[in-house]
Amino acid sequence: MRTEYIKKLADMMDCDAMLISPSEELRFFTGFSPMMCERFQALFVKKSGECFYLCNTLYADEVAEGLKHQCPVYHWHDNEGMDKAYEILKNEGLEGKTIGVNSTAQAFNVLDIGKNCGITFANGKPLLEEVRIIKTHEELENMRLSAKVADSAFEKACAMIRPGITEAEVRDVIVGTMAEQGGCNFDCIVASGPNSGYPHYNSFDRVIKEGDCIVLDWGCAINEMMSDLSRTVFVGSISDEQRRIYELVDRAQMTAQNAAREGAFIPDIDKAARDVLDEQGYAHTLVNRVGHGIGYSVHEGPYINQINHRHLERGMCFSIEPGVYLGGRFGMRVENIVCINERGETEVLNKADRSLRILDWYRK
Image 1 (cartoon, helix red, strand yellow):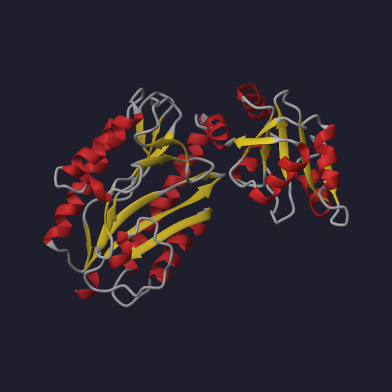
Image 2 (cartoon, rainbow, N blue to C red):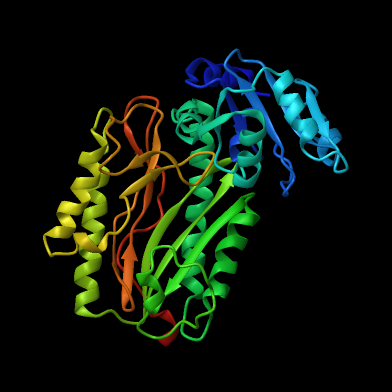
């Protein structure tokens, strides 16, 4: 267990305890995260810094081993139901208390616990993100490695994209390239043609055609630290409208990226990108935030938007990814991961080519 981070969480806690169900958040604090099913299980961290784990007997031995026997593991059997779990929580002094919950806590379990133990549950996700929002030197080094692995997939993807192949085939090359270099926990979007107009398109069925605009968005984990980047490419040809919008998106990304300095006010970074897009009336098509924090999860603090009223600090890592999305027609996005590094410098982790790329080698 990472006792230094558990202590940091306890010191920052504004509730009586924190409930952390299996997730990357649990792995962050303990180095371990078991399979999760409908049976309730979680690590409880009290404001005092004391911890215990509560799970079904099915998981008890595995959890105890995974936590290296560093905290009590209480368990309840299927034939007992949750009544024993309620008694354990009461014996631990949590009856009637306020407990924060993490991002994967299952509502049906939390509601039953609250009802039977008089516990008030609160959103603990912002606090859990705050504990890890500033990356250590080791974490930054792993993020650099992760970014390098993700970068390496871009040219291989570009070399095989042509009319007649599916989005799934492109995905497989990107994921396979990252896996060859030790990547895991892959994320990948291959959004071609009209699918590129959907920012988080989540299918891979379409056959790529001549003239398509393709948004590629991918990343992986190296030593638990995630990478994430986006590039937009064009198959065989590009229209004047698409060229104009791509150049606008590229400039919006670079403008916001340059605004991301130590001490910068986060809403100003979001605004910098939108102001560029609005020069040609496209800011309204950017339907999401300009960026998100990244580390142990692809999306975590700090969020680069208009409502996050804080300033960038050393150790923060985040994406800058403005886009234009014209639903039913096409969309495009350019994304890099940026960190404020150990020296207070703005460091762009992604090195993959960002120039306008028209893939026409197959016609030669």
